Image (cartoon, rainbow over all chains, first blue to last red):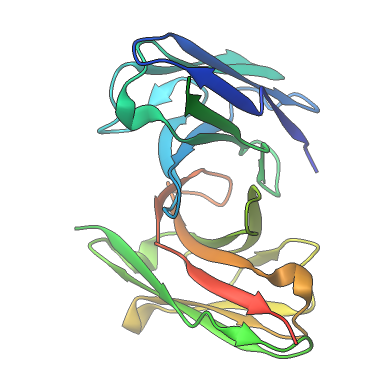
Length: 107
Length: 120
């Protein structure tokens, strides 16, 4: 199975900060990467698919980039609603696998 | 409104069985690949099983193969997960999720989850 590694595991930031989360794949997954946001007690929400395509309804302050084995999720100006845990997921090779998550907490 | 609603989670004994259900609404259920994804308490997400749009093709994580069975009843817009020989490691919130299109696509719609606890 393709292993997905996220860093950092926890990130402390303030409202208005630019935040970057990294996801690395154990082998090339081309551009088949998705990002999800999850708040406590809630289901994950799809933010970005195919590495850089914004899901409908997701604010434009979220963006994704990368190809092959290294990917990033960037939030350009962190808002109070963005404090959550973020997961990456590869969909290049079955079975789908997820990163361990990055918790974005208030500094 | 597009919605998935799981049910069936409960406390089960090790070695026991449970059947989870997921009712879909707001989209053409019978044309989409559907999956189960679980999340152990305080942990990350783990894909469990996927069923193709026609129901003919099913896929399982190694941890689920031989113990879990995924099925669907398109007449009732319902996805099922039959879980047998339950272990403590199966304790998790189980989410049903709709894929964007194909088996390999990400999950664009998720249910609220149903909690399965395996303990004596």
